[in-house]
Image (cartoon, rainbow, N blue to C red; front, side, top):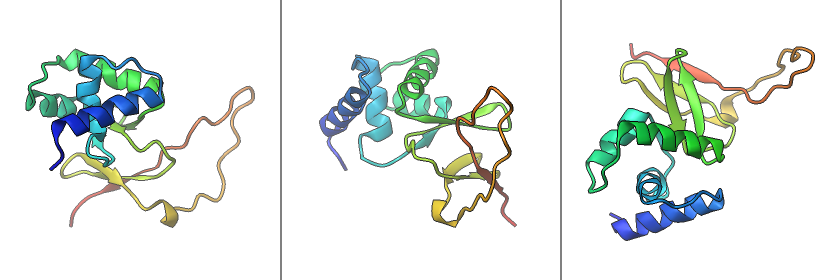
Length: 140
């Protein structure tokens, strides 16, 4: 298990890559997200719950605002499921996801197994910003 100071350092460095000011709360949340070097799929609520398990005190509103700032800075991607539930992914590369209906969780799907042969033309005056592929799974 990694020392919390190592996780805090990694979190601060992650913020620095995007030029974000390393406030105490941002560093604490970043440490939870990337401190161990693993990618994460979180909801605001799950990150808030994880933060409550530490000595850091943050409000749910702060978690939402911080996740938005991380997305705006390009550190995370937001993936919306069912038009209302948002997940935040620390892996910003283009890749598909599995959505597990029984646990309401998100995980990476193998990108090398996905083939999109053609996308429709974007309407005049627009461009395709990104394509999110979410494959819904249900256990038998």
